[in-house]
Length: 127
Length: 178
Image 1 (cartoon, each protein chain N blue to C red):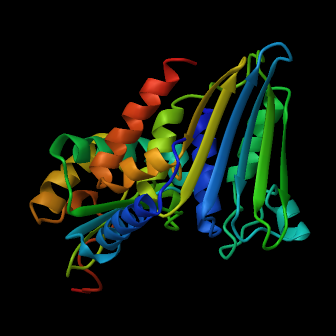
Image 2: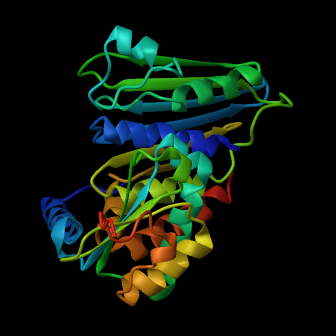
Image 3: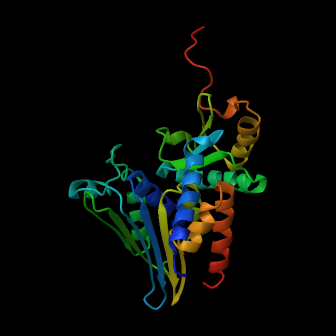
């Protein structure tokens, strides 16, 4: 490993700070793939991998992609949560690589919730 | 779980939930002694002796510590089916180490599988965490440390798409020698 200079460290720190900022708030959307044991055994890594490939193909820069633990509904895994800035988060269930690509296209890019893959749509109307 | 790299992803995700800033993953394949060893070491919050014991009990779960549930019991079963064993060493404030050993040639040993996708998922999903990965096989070694100057610089210069591409290319290159 080459010698690290103080300037190098400062530059890296600045770059990391920049990407962290993007991660923490500046993204226009955030996608969280749930990676609990249940999610992983149901295929969450495939869902994540499909998303990563879409990000790479399209060179997506303004969307945060992350993973988290079990979302509490193990029988409906793999699950992912899509949050568009300023809108309510949507939980998608029973995902596959094809479904997540479609969700990316229609919801993240197109702005329309893919109701047929969402956990629930609307709430508490009784008539 | 059909491959060991998925178990590794599961344990590492638990490490991160436990507050780890650094997760070390070591894979050692030693053909003369017919062993495959996997070690995941983190600097997360750790567990006391009772929680540590319970983490191997599939009927125990705790939403506060999270290193519990079916994950470790299933990993241990995978090891036992292949003539091996899983041990957990942990202490509060001292992090956790999960060590799993398999008989390499055992017919029921699951394949390591797609380690590269496991690493890409971890590194891209958690840019704030340091990952140190080593895979040794018969004297040859593949290593990736996200805090290495060159690697940290390459990763910090990219967004999620760029990081994924960089990690994939890097692993493809280094794995050519293994």
